[in-house]
Image 1 (spheres, rainbow, N blue to C red):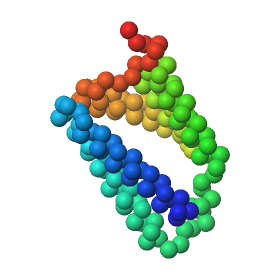
Image 2: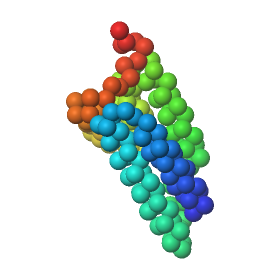
Image 3: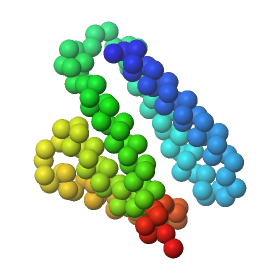
Image 4: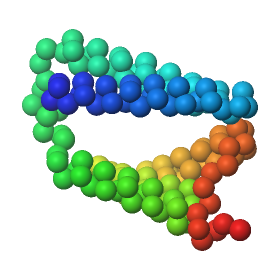
Length: 145
């Protein structure tokens, strides 16, 4: 389990470094701020996670039983489906569907949270990216002009 966590941390650090390097190619200084900040945060948090796993001597059996191969497979398939759904119906319709599906896969049963979290997350993303940062989001084939 420790080895998998370290590999996952390394993958996230490598991806974040590549996004950080890619963000320097943006011409507008305002459009590179968020990707750079997010990349740096992912690098820091993945590094902390890796260090914690290295220092951790014993992994409880409960933690190792929580990860099921079917859950991981369904999560990956749902994420790939989400990417295709964005292309078809757009980001703001696909995102709450994706979050709801992922919460169900991960075992969330509370009906209020199953409704509130996807809608709330989508609203927060809309406020941040569209209204504050003025970043265009994919509208999908169905809603493109």
